[in-house]
Image (tube, rainbow, N blue to C red):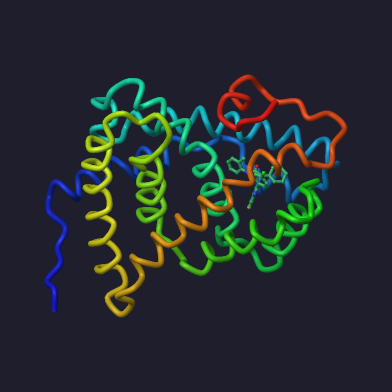
Length: 233
Ligand SMILES: Cc1ccccc1NC(=O)[C@H](C1CCCCC1)n1c(-c2ccc(Cl)cc2)nc2cc(F)c(F)cc21
């Protein structure tokens, strides 16, 4: 039986990541807004673009706290942010969806999102992904590390020094692996299941531009930042 223990420096690393992850969250709670009232497809589109724009801004702030990220080549830092922003947003949306809510509220939230203006064909894959995240019952350490591992994906377009990214990602993967073993000793495959979600996330993210351009709204207006990140307009 493998004796797994978190070293002192791994504990410090985890605290830095979790603190940064919980600090750099969007102030306004989109789930609360959606539960408060029903918006039109146009209003929902505007809300989405606002949420997605501020999500990119907090993502940039979060990555500054990932040990080693700022010592990467500057252009590679940009390539990693650009390459992971959509996945980070869907991962964040899934985590928001998987939050414990008073009974019946998750169903209301799901209904509001289904009717938000998103086109039918994307609803199934999106909720399949969200529900696969819900079923993992992730703790915040796992959520923060999974987002960090997503950002530190070496094979994003235009990354020059992939080895340097791999080295930092491996540190995070090893920490997450240990956490999973300690957190769920009776579920040896849990770590593999977590990483398997990143494959589903990448597939879902392939549709992101179409999900936006096919939104049931008359005016598909995007912020300059979203045009940069979301391959739209
Ligand atoms: C963007 C962003 C950043 C941080 C946190 C959450 C979000 N996400 C959003 O604001 C949008 C809202 C937006 C308003 C209309 C309904 C969906 N959103 C999406 C989503 C649907 C389709 C696409 Cl193409 C993208 C995202 N999935 C969600 C699941 C949730 F549980 C939730 F509460 C909000 C969710």
